[in-house]
Length: 141
Image (cartoon, rainbow, N blue to C red; front, side, top):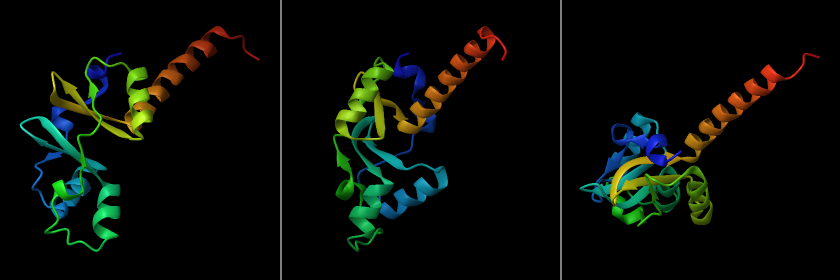
């Protein structure tokens, strides 16, 4: 199944500009209940800020979240997936890059995001379907 069908779409994306303060980004994370914000300009991914980035690079270093901005702590040019990539390609990219969240692009433009949590929910559903088949075709004990 291509990621274009699995990824969280534009309406679910949480994005910000590179000059957005970390305080504002943290507040958006809290209100939207997400662990990352994609930093973009005109649908072109510039970077990504995660809750871990905020903890390690702002809080732990005693920086002021009001004056520290996204471009100061974001992971620049994050590895991205393409809408035509399949789950196996995505898993390989995530593993190779050591990330849990990946922006999804179509023709180089941001169209969504997919997370490890999304994959786990997908796998759980697939395993449920397989279990139902096995139960239906197995003799009762």
